[in-house]
Amino acid sequence: MSLLDDGWAFGAEFADPLASLDTSIPDGVDGALLAAYALGLADDALVAAQRMTWWCSRAPELELDLAWANVALDLLGQARPLLVRAATAEPALVPALPAGSPIPAEDALAFFREPAGFRNHRLVEGADADFAQAVVRLLLLSTTRLAVFERLRHSRDQVLAGVAAKGVPELAYHRDLAAQWFLVLAGGTEESRRRTVAAVAALWPLHVEALETHAVEVAAARAGVGADPADVREQVAAVLGPLLETAGVVPPPSGRARPAATGRDGAHTAEFAPLLDEMQSVARAHPMGRW
Amino acid sequence: MNDQPHTDEWAVYEVFVRSRRGLNHVHVGSVHAPDPALALRHARDVYTRRNEGVSLWVVPAAAITASDPGEKEALFEPSADKVFRHPTAYQVPEGVSHL
Image (tube, rainbow over all chains, first blue to last red; front, side):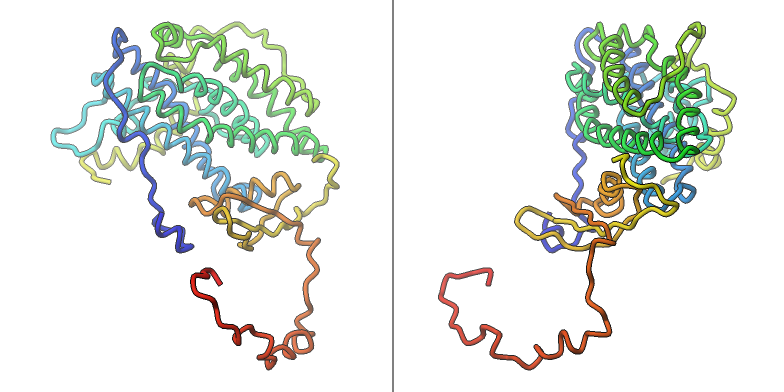
């Protein structure tokens, strides 16, 4: 604070609001269930952050390099305490490392799990075909995640509630940024509109899949630690409906049968393993590394 | 926002940040954006990443009328020797701060 008062921004003190949270597991809650629920939320953020980072140096303008990198960093910041939560609630989830490795549990989860061990939605793992897809993907992710986090602020689990309280304003900004860009692209040139309509058509089935009710979410909601998937779906529709209508974009009918297994079950697309390879390569080359 | 004319190049907006309540907005730089609403968001992402501000203004660079460097002499030099315009002859009363 004192440095800021002198008009100098570097070195401003950023206190970790999660440092003092009660990490005990709430009474009557199954640790494995809490861990599975936290892992899904953590992996959505971790994988989305990795994908979004690709845009840094490749976005249409420098301003967007920074905007997307900022969002990716926010999401990475959400992933970390959620991975810690998963590891403390169910230590058996954490991949084994060589004896004496200094790598913390959250890094072991991020960098030493196989693709099938990840629980992220398939929506966040695909590469963006163009900037319109980046905008639509962020819009769908942030709208759903904000609806979940708003409810998680009241979770019986103090860690989830704390992560959610810190994440809500971040996600509100992500959604706002994506929605503004969505309207500009949809109402821009013929080319930008064509690409925006194509992005919605391509990503909508994955969005519907991400809103499917999963057994872990139902159990977590019933235990008072997770958000009710039905409430989330309702809020997401109430936000996206008017926005798409304003943009004059009609989503494709969601007539596809529900897949037998989704990202929440560890079923991923062909694009996912190469993404993880790149993300994990350095850490895996140095299992005794200290970062 | 969609009634803005579309051109090949995005417009430049000058960015002003107020670092805290009570201070004035200070010019910090510029951003490119397709409309004012996004200029504000880009300014937020480029210039307030490290907790620098509590308020932002963006102004289309084209709306600024600037002095001509060629007229610098006529505009600014005449004031250089008008020492009597500085309020240095006043005694500042005790207890008055922030002057």
